[in-house]
Each structure stands twice: as C-alpha cells, then as structure tokens.
Length: 246
Ligand code: TMP
Ligand code: ASP
Image 1 (tube, rainbow, N blue to C red):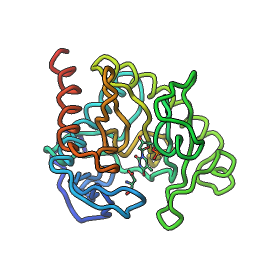
Image 2 (image 1 turned 120 degrees about the horizontal axis):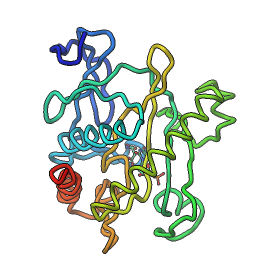
Image 3 (image 1 turned 180 degrees about the vertical axis):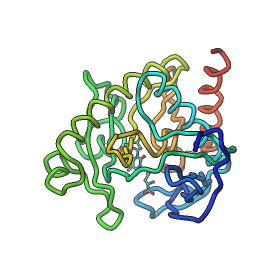
C-alpha cells in the first residue's frame, strides 16, 4: 500500500500514559493518537495539559521529518489530523535512551550537583522500559545480558542518538532554546532495521529559553510551576516559526 492511500483505523492495540495505538487495515502501519493526559513521578502524579496531544503530535512529526532530512530513519509516515499520525509498526526496543547536554532532573539529584552545568561532552544512559520495575537504569552490558538488544544494535542506537543530539541541539539553538536533555525510544522493523520511534516533544525533552533559562517543557507540570500550557504553546510557535521561515 502506498502512503498516499487511505489508512483505516481498526482496533485499539494499546493505551499508554500519553498515547493510544490502533491497528490499521495495513499490517505495516499503526495509528498513534496523542492524549492531553500527563503523568509524572512514575505515574503517581496525574493531570491534564490542555492542547498537549495536538502540540506533541505536530511537533514530533515536524522534528522527525527534519531528522529524516539529515538521514535519520524514523517511524514517521503521515500526519492524519491534529492528534493522529500513521507510523510504521515496530517492535519497540525496551530501552529509554537519555542524552544530556546540561545537568538537570535525575542527574542532578543522583549525583548531587546543581542544574545548569554545561557538559564538555554529552552523556548517554539507558533505562529498562519496564513499569513494574520502575524503569531501572542499566548499562549496555546489562541490556545485552537481558537480551533487550544485541551489541550491534546498541552500538547503532548510541551512534544514532548522539547524531540526533547534534541535529536537534543546532535546530533548537536557532530558535533560542537550549536542549538540556531528552529521551528517545527506538523500534525494529520486521527486517530488523532500527528506526527512531515514540515522540520528541516537551514531554520527553527539557527545553530552556536560551536567554532566561525559563523552563519550556513538562518540568512545569512535574514541579507545579504553573504556565504549563503556555510553555507548550511557546515551544510550538518557536518550532513552527522555523517551518514558516523555510
Ligand atoms: P530525568 O532527568 O528525569 O532522568 O529525565 C531525563 C529526560 O528524559 C527529560 O528530558 C525527561 C525525559 N523523560 C521521559 O521522557 N520519560 C520519563 O519517563 C523520564 C523519567 C524522563
Ligand atoms: N511520564 C513518566 C511517568 O509518568 C515520567 C515523566 O515524564 O516525568 O512517570
């Protein structure tokens, strides 16, 4: 089936904290539907960020297309509506891949350092995507031992994640935003090809205004700072100002 053909939504396959995934009449594709629901602190804190589903859907699709232009393979196929996107059906590699450019969040807490230290080199870390175990951090040897991915797959994921960081860091710097840290997930196509999956949004990245360091991401919700919807809208308008200027 060509991507221009109509893809019909069939049954709900999975409902996560922020998205639903539906099967389609095409075995290679699924439809992702983004919700306004937000959770934090391992699901303990629940709420709604009005308009988030639409912003995350459109921003993530835009960024994935940018990455594709730079030769990064992603799951993105086609935006269907404000909240819904056709993506390639993948089997998710059960690793959260976190890149950090500046200290913040769990890094600052774990290692007892203030937020805002700019690293000489970006860091990478992995968590085992497993809610029952609360997504424990692990290293690449643990991931191989647990057969979450092969050595070769991990090498490719690491190289791709650092490459994505370089592309996104520059993209966000151009719209006055520091890319502090972010989380990626990768999936495998039936032929074994690894592609970037999940989303890139203010839910999964830390964005600070380049001048003021104002937080423009989900930390506003996690930390009860107020102005969460406005921060998501601000990020959306900056990202799409780039689109309009191109
Ligand atoms: P952390 O400092 O809490 O470990 O978060 C690092 C980055 O990963 C931050 O940009 C938020 C993102 N993240 C997720 O997308 N999902 C998660 O479940 C967690 C814990 C973090
Ligand atoms: N979404 C995750 C949770 O619900 C964590 C986070 O983004 O802070 O626990």
